[in-house]
Amino acid sequence: MGALRLLITGANGFLGRACVDTALARGHSVRAMTRNAASFPDGVEAVLGDLAEGCDAAFFEGVDAVIHTAASVSNDARALERDTVLATRRLIEAAEAAHAPPMMVLASSIAVYDAGLTGTVDEASQVETLPAKREPYIASKLAQEAMLCEASLRGWCMRIGALYDTERRWNAHIGVRKGPVLLSLGRKGDVPVVNVKDAAEAMIRAAETAPEQACEALDIVESDLPSRATFIAAEHSGLHFPLHWRLLLPAAWLCEAVLGPRAPGLLRPRILRARMQAVSYPNERAKTRLGWLPQKQFVKVKS
Image (cartoon, rainbow, N blue to C red):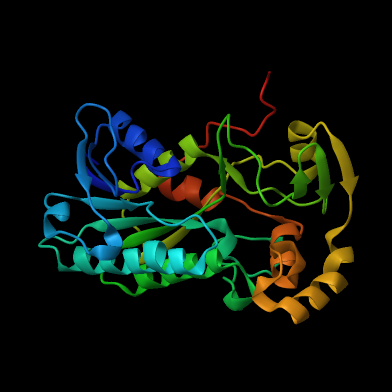
């Protein structure tokens, strides 16, 4: 496929920035959309817009594909409803109404899968059936995917693992860490991570590739995922108290019964199970469909 014109939303975010750089490196032109003014490399067309307030038809002029990374990364229900769900709805509606509707590549999350799954989790696995029992973030990602799959656009739902780079490496699949003290909640199972540059490469390659169905999902994780034990050995050098997550389930059931959604995440049974269940995440479909080969591997950063 030749050079494309890409509209990248959330272009000043962690993943959005990496997508801009990757798109340029692969010879595409970029229209970078942000809510606030930001500087980009030469040749990038920067546009300001708040998706939740609507989309200007001019955003889509000459655009072949939309790389949609803009979203709230909080667990605040109101922020997610506005900046993830409403923003995506208005973006899709505007793209559908464009003279030449573009393809859309959505940055979703590996966390959308059902908390009860065990063993291997891939694109054919069940997505979460009880989103109200999970973090509001999960419900917002499921809503994004549903909107894209129900739209008239062709698109990709990229179920991306926990993003990291050399400065940002810790994630919620390990346990609770306060300063030098770690309470880990399991040692088995993959930690579904992916370097932000590899995730961006997958996003841009998806824009270059027509999906086999109107809406196709891909899991975007590293090829050789670290176990929880490997992750802890690489990232934590302080006090470590291991505890199997199942031992917390009685307290979690009680805490949720008393506090409901206000209970801390790891003291809500379905959230605890989703984060700590020992599962594996293959990425074969993404490699086959996109010709994508992750270049990074989670290793200890040298001091």
